[in-house]
Every structure is written in structure tokens, then in C-alpha cells.
Length: 388
Picture 1 (cartoon, helix red, strand yellow):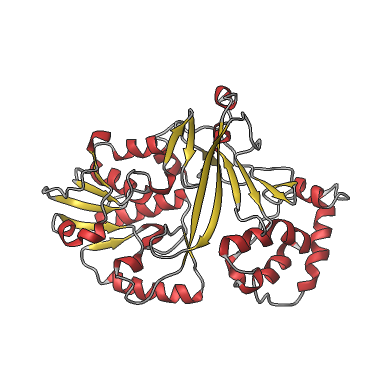
Picture 2: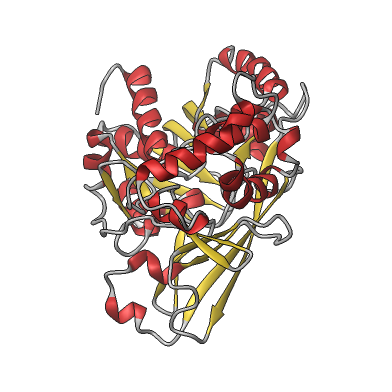
């Protein structure tokens, strides 16, 4: 497996059925499916490692999520059964905590949250009454921006404590300047359940995501540290078909203009304490605090008592920012202007006879991990007429 990971910056002279640009989950899934049908694949990756943004590495015995927290969750049994072929998943349940002005609140918005915000709340009806009273200010009005939309859904207090600052940091502008449809809904749970996801299946691969991805790749050839776009003609010449998962506007040289993205910066450090914050994810919702969350990686493996007892821990602070060329694009800004520009690029992409575009950057869309794999299944079926 790992012996097929080439970092010598040499383009092979072999012939391939598929050239897969990018070694994230989308193309790794395709490589696994194509290879199982006897197709010869080459994966080309700019970075010096496989697994894309789900890449994990070990430090002090702790599996560190280099590019932010990744919790696998899905209601799609086909996807769950598929990934379970390549990894044993632990029983991690995502229960993030909010720190707002040194007060802690549970996410998702549930009875624990409501009782902390409003000490008089005892029953679900109490909580509903507070929310309805505070959202009445928007009764009969069409929300003009995200702030008004959020208040109409959850009321003033929840919006102020849990939504406003975090969202403004994430998107780099005031909520009153953001379109209302960025937030489709804000789930309210009138139970004492801190599980963030409602999906049937949830967990993290034992040993980290990188091992899972390596097993998915199997004997597929991978060329690391190589930029496909800088050697496009040479790569295209050795493959019958190309699946490109980089940024679609970059592929076309930004000739129609640059799509907007949000980027992230990560500060990771080892601390000589056994337990820094008591939870894997703590969100910081004050706008004045520049990072959106702190991740303490050992808590992703909270059944591993020996790991939790280690006298060291590893934390990561996550800072969102405005993307510029050279930064890693993480989140597409799917407002009206960017969606219209993406449509123009998608029309150009449709005219490509050899290259197919996929993944979150190639399709300018946010995907959870299960969505990424399901979309790869669909592309595989369209390209081959087979299903997994």
C-alpha cells in the first residue's frame, strides 16, 4: 500500500484508465471502486499526504485531526456499510460545548441549553414559551438578513449567545449583512439530549482516518507533492479519463472571475496537562475571540482510558478567514453572486470531453463526509453504468 506513494515528482510513463486529481474521500472512493473492477488508476495530490482534509497523524499517541474536527455520521446504511469495510469505528458521540463569556452551554440547542440561558425553564413548554415570546418581534415579517431569520427561529437570547458571534467570525461579516438563507433552520430539541447529530450511525475510525484511507486505496498508485495543473498536458496524455476535485475556477485559470471561499488557519500545540477542556470540541461564540473553536484531540477517543490518562494533550485552535489564491479553500460562499458565477463555470465544465469535476471544490458545494462518498457512488454509476 504505502510503497505506492511516490513523492519523487516524476510523472509515470504508464497508461491509466483514470487519473484522479486529489486524494480526498471523493477520489479515494472512486479509486477503490474502479480498482475493484480491474481499472488502472493514478491519484495525483498537491499535498504530501493522502486523505485530504480528513488526514490524521499521531503525536504523543494521540490521533490529531490536522484540518479540524471530522466526525463521521450518516443515515445512509449503504455508505456506513461501505466505510466499515475499511475501519472499525469507535462509539464517539459529538456533544460540543459553547463558551460564551466564560459560561458554558450545550449544543445542539436543547433543554440543557434552555435551562442554562433561562433559569426559570423547567419543562419543554417553558422553553417553547420563551422562544415564541422572543421571536414574536418577527411575526408577519419576511426576514431581510440572517440576523432577522435567526431571531424568527430561535429568539433574541439564543441568537445573541450561540449564533451571532460564531457566524460572524465564520463568514467574516455582520449577520445583518448576510443573506437569510445561509441558515436554513436552527434545530431546537426539547429533550435533554446533547448528541449533536441525529443520524443512526456515528463514530471515528479507530487509529484515525489516514489508515482508513490507505486501506481504501490499497495498491492504487499515488503521486504526492505534485500539482496537476502545472503539468496538465503531460498528465492528460497518460490517462483515458480525468476526475478533477480541485477548485473549478482555478482549473479554468479564473478566466470568468474568482469564486469566493472561506479558509481556515489552524494552530496546534502540545500541552503538558492530561485534560485541557474536558471535551473534544468547545466553540467560542464571542466575536471578540478570534478563533471559532478549540479541539482537544484525545477526547475523540473517549473510550480509550489509557489515552485519556496520558499526562499530555494536543489542542488545535481554528481561525476562519477570507480566502485568497494560495490559501486552502474550505467553504464555498454559496450566495447569489457566487452561485451565478459557478453556473457559468459548470457550463464550461460540461463541455469538457475528458475531464469530469467532483467533490466540494469541483462542484463548489459543501459536503459532509457521507455526502462525499455517496456523490462518488453516483459518479461511478454514471461513468460505468454499474453500482457498488
